[in-house]
Length: 151
Picture (cartoon, rainbow, N blue to C red):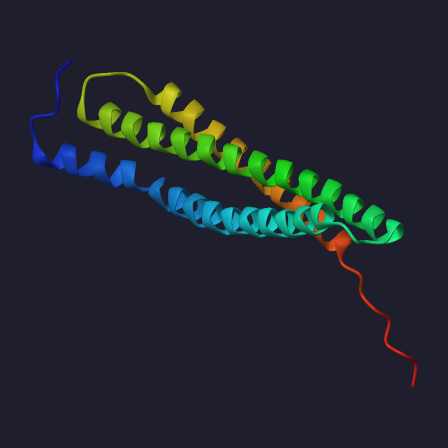
């Protein structure tokens, strides 16, 4: 493998490889937001489980709490799926950065691999967004909005 001997080619390689970093920044921000949602789901599930284990809850309330726990489990699965997809996205975007840099600064012919890696990363990002949307829909179904009395 022969690397580029001139600074201009290396500089252009760096510029080319840095462009996908903006997507990587969005992915890391989304991972942070989704991880926060997962923490809240876990906290709520632990609270409900502790109350149920403590006992002294009427049966109708316990049934409602178990129903909420099932919804929290579904939300947790969606959030975990979202985090996994975002992680795969970040790996593929990182791979794209490496491939673009190597393709520009060496004699390797890898544009197809870089293209496939980037497009796969974007596809994983879109799937993660769908999981995020599904989780927010499930979360809002749990809310009980009290109707305001008519004036």
